Each structure stands twice: as C-alpha cells, then as structure tokens.
Length: 485
Image 1 (tube, rainbow, N blue to C red):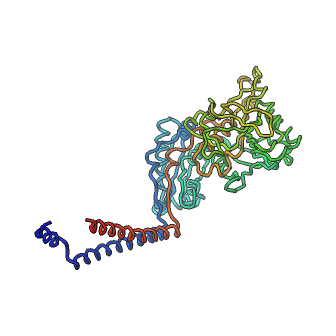
Image 2: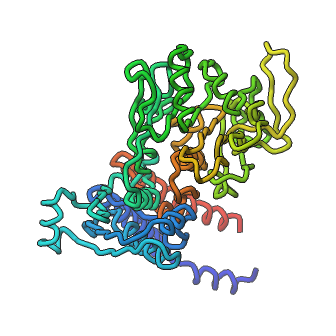
C-alpha cells in the first residue's frame, strides 16, 4: 500500500473524538430502547394486557355444530351482553355471526342475534340485569326458556398463562339444550371406588368430563343403589366409571333389571379390578378379555393412539381424529351377539387399533397374545329391529376398555377426541339427535397468552440485560474483525 493510500484511509477514519461520539450515540440508543421496553412491559402488567391469536377468523364452524344447527328448529334469540373491552367479546361476536351464517346455509334453526354493551346501552343493560343476566354473558332464549352462558364458561384456562376460547362447544350445546323438550337425567354410579365426578384431582379426577356432560344439557346425579333399591325410572342413562370393588348381588340384579327395561349403560372398565358386572355385560353381548391393548402408534410409549373407528353414529364424525387410551382392556363380541331374530344383539366396534396392534397377556396369565386389530370401545344394541309397532325401546350399551381416557389428566390439553367420543356415546345412548361431530371448530380456536406480574418482570429483566449484551458482543466482533483486517 502506498503512502497516498495510507493517507487517504487515515483521512476516511473519524478522529478519536468522533468515534467516542458514535459510541455515545449507540449507548444512548440502547439505553433508550431498554427504557422503552421496560415502560411498555410495566404498562402491560398494569393493564393486564393479553394477546388474542386470530385463528378463529379463518377456521370454519365444526361438523358437530353444523349438525346441531341443522337439527334444531324454530327461532332462537341470542343476546351478546358484553363490555366491548372484555377479552372474550370479539371471538364471541365472530362466533355468533358464524353460527347465524351456518344456520342459514343448513336450513335449520333461525338465529336472531343482537349485542348489548352495558356501558352504552344503559336501558337494555338495566333490564337484562334485573332479569338475572350478568354482564359479560351470552343469553339464549327460545319458547319461553332461557340459558345464560357467562364469559367464565367460554374461556378454558390451559395452564397459568394461557386461556383457550371454547365458545363454539358451549354455545352449540346451549342451542341443542333449548331444542330438547326436557332436560335428560344421567346417573353416575357411586359407592364402589368408581371415578368421582366431583373429584378435582388434576390426574385422577373426573370433574372435567362431568362439566362437559352438564354443558351438553344433561342433569348429572350421583347414584347409590342401596338408597334407591334400583336405577330410578327417570334415568336416561347410567354411567359406571371403573369400580374398584365388586357390586353386591342385589346391585348387580338392579342393573340387570334396568337394562331389561330398555336401559342405557355407559360402562368404563377398570383394567385392574373386577366389578361383578362382567357377566351382565357378557349376557348383553360384550366380553371383557384379559388382554391389554398395545399399539406401535403411541405418544409416550405408555399409551396408544387410536385412529381407526367403526361405522356407527357415535364415530362417523371422528374420521381424521385421534383418541388416546392408557392401558385399555381388549373387548370382543360375546356369544349373545350371535343371536338372531327381532331381539338379536347388534355389536359394533367403535375404536380399535391398527393391524399392527395386539393384545398383550398378563405375565401371570397363560393366554397367548391376541393378534390385532383389537377393540378398545364397542357399542351394543339389543331389540333395535323389533319393529315400530312395539312400544319398547332397544337396550343400548357402550363399553370402553378403561376409565382413564376421560380422566382430568387426559382431557387437560383438549388435544384428542376423547371428549367427543364420550359425549357422542352419551348422546347415542339417550337418543339425542345431532351434536355427534367433533367439537374443535373455529370458535374454539382463538386463545390468549399473557404473563403474570412475575413473568413480565422476568421478561423485562431478560430484555434489559440481553439487548446491551448483544450490542456489546456485536461491537466487539466488529472491532476484532477490523484488527484482523
């Protein structure tokens, strides 16, 4: 390099004072950015800011909701009684507009929707409040009956910092309930170590599925057979959720008598303990085998992912949906399912593994493994072909090879169709038309994420520390490269 070139390069470099000024400008910019970040986060903490993900604006109404809207008749008046600053207002309003468009398209129920803001529509808000409708709720009215869905029921807390808007499931169920003449009563058997619908344990409780049953419009009652000497006459269905101790001979007879009277039973197997009802199920067409279902399709190695379903009203809408089972017993049709005539038993496999699945025997059991596919859920109907001139309804049973598939832990993430399989089964048992689709539609897609005060503080400290560090490292890298050059 010649002397002229060196002099030109030196002239191009800023003097030392200029370099210090540039460094000061950079430091001031970083300080200003950090200060702005801190102020924004403190303001967000103060205002409890959350962020809505707009997936609900692009996903369609689910098949389940479309079916409900198509089967419901008449006119339903809907009032969206929301403060427009309430976080559930926008997705709820979008959802109701989607409901109305879907109802017009499918030619079922007519929805008349209006919005009332308690801050602006003072007269109407006062009238609704006087009638017992709280602010931030959706009111459904039809034929003199009303259902109020508060905002708390529209939002499902999924973890400490995330809330899922599940308005489609809840609002569609409200419309389905208004379409029914009476509220059906479902009994949950107790007294033998069954899963408890009032147990809030995050792993083994059953409060989540109990809430879903009530949302669907059923009145859920606990039942102790020794207090009633039988299944009550108003029972639309009986749920037996995996007893841990054996029912007495009298209790088994009462259950058998109920089924003989065209009863409806939803039975969840306890893979570890016998209930004493195995013989009753065998008589009605379902055999609980000693094999445990195993599949190579698994999430954790301790469960099995089911994607194969039989052709039945319960499962026709579950195509492309997965259900998760943990340690399910394998089911088979019993000898009673081979009967013929008007009183014959119709056995349908609802959920089964693929051909690569199998039934594994217990190490203490002499049986060989059961080749797949194996059945983990089945439906039975007896007397369904007796003819329209006979007043008796057919007896119906749904048997699932385990009870954990609807425990709180399994339903916590709402990432499987377990809830839909259970509710579809209950609707089929009780003869409810409509509402047997998959519930996860566009209205259930929106969610919010937010941080609590501690989360925001950690985020602020991270940003405040990370930004200067990044700038410092970048400056050191530039300086190092210049020295090398």
